[in-house]
Image (cartoon, rainbow, N blue to C red; front, side):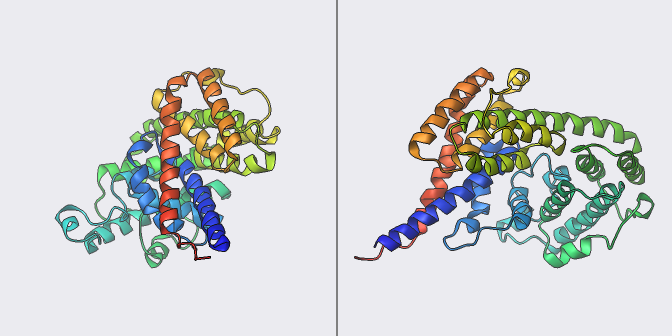
Length: 370
């Protein structure tokens, strides 16, 4: 009986940790998270099944991007606009066909495969323009490609065979205006998240010219830069809140959770500074830096508080430590101008995690008779 109970407890702890990790990424996907957390959880349900091995770090990000693709592609992911526009099979069958089956039609599959091939080539051109492929670029490309919902063989066929230049990009068949814009937006998303190399800017503008929307390259860049700035400010607030709320936790406990938050929410150009204030400096020591973050819109404040709480509570602290963290987070959130958003954000996180744990507990084997 003791052994069975221990197994059930271990499984619940495992599910809690995985669900909290997933939740941070889902919260970072967009400020409308309240509308898609439940369908996202259903799409990730297989990961929480007892006995299922946790995904490796390499497999984690493409897997979670695929789960989000059908409900809310992460706003900072390259080619997120293409996925949001419907260039994915993760949403299942469409139109009348959707009344009878969830399997996409051959026509939809071919259309998505074609767009995915163009996106893969555009990303290859832009990422390779400076002769360097960073870890973030590699992860962003993997997430984008997983979001199309294609089979492994289809993904292999969609990817280019090697390095490409804009001159080698072939635009085959008709492309909707929105698809053309989102391909260019996705190219900017890939290279503007970190320091922009002149060769990459030149490559994006050449791609835009190939797509016959060269005149839209500059406005699209401005839109992406504004979006990245909003994401960076939201991530900065989340890191500061988590750092303050987790001040009582051991450094080796909080550090990996903070790193996951930064990877999930922060543009790479801001990541180094956030690591310095959120992890390297004793992980959670020092006064929070909140002065510049009061101007965030309400939805972003809720998002930041929720990400911070999911990060800290995901370390599965003792009950007393969790109460301390909740109180500290509430206090610092008020100092950041988010006093009215705290309860809403914490309720969202607690409800999500409670539901995942309840489901895992319900599916766990019954304890054996003594």
